[in-house]
Image (cartoon, rainbow, N blue to C red; front, side, top):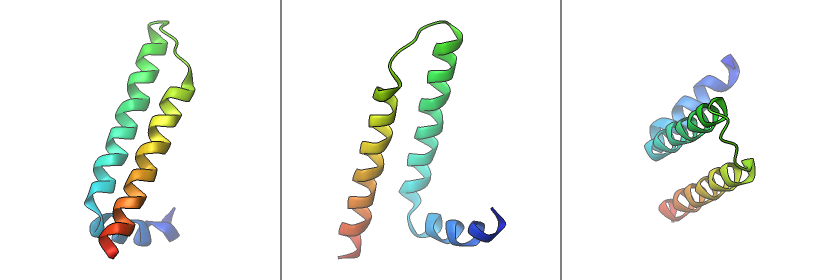
Amino acid sequence: MIVAAGALGRFIEEHPTTKMLALAFLLAVGVALVADGFHFHFPRGYLYFGIAFSAAVEVLNIVAAKR
């Protein structure tokens, strides 16, 4: 963690939208955990697909911004 902290911090400073995306991921996982606490179960694939799709779009945005 200590080794990666500097590089990760620089990346987040250069791309602040990734910070918002990470916070949205944490919120989504938190909502899923609270839903599980109320015995409302839904397939985790929906959550994982949303996270993967959002991350892919963010990668495409970063690549497009560099061009």
